[in-house]
Amino acid sequence: MKQHILSFFLCLVVLVPQAQTRSTVPGPVVVQPDKEKVLEEEVREDQEIAIYPNPNSGIFTVSLPTSEAKQADLRIMNVIGNEIHREVLTRTNAQFSTTINLNRFAKGLYYVKLETDNFSAIKRVVVK
Image (cartoon, rainbow, N blue to C red):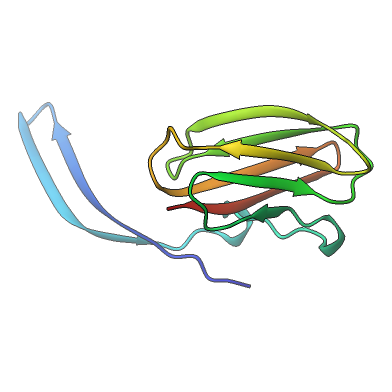
């Protein structure tokens, strides 16, 4: 299993109203998320989401090859978790597939979440 480490800068401000004082404590913070709460879930091999090409220029295909579900909910999120695209997919020829265009959004890392009644997975996609 991959080890996920997040690193960012945090500035903590503590306000104490009774003492009418304010203290700022800057410093680096390293977070190692619980493996159960990481944005990339392990999925069964026969239900792997395909994203291609990846990396891409903003246009890519998302597909789930074999699924018994009739519909799937597709969400695209930016790195801070804001949903930037959502659509409901209908199964065609025993699979879900759609082409996504993120050209109006900034280049960078995005998360693709695909959910059916009995399946959920999140994958990363890079727009260059």
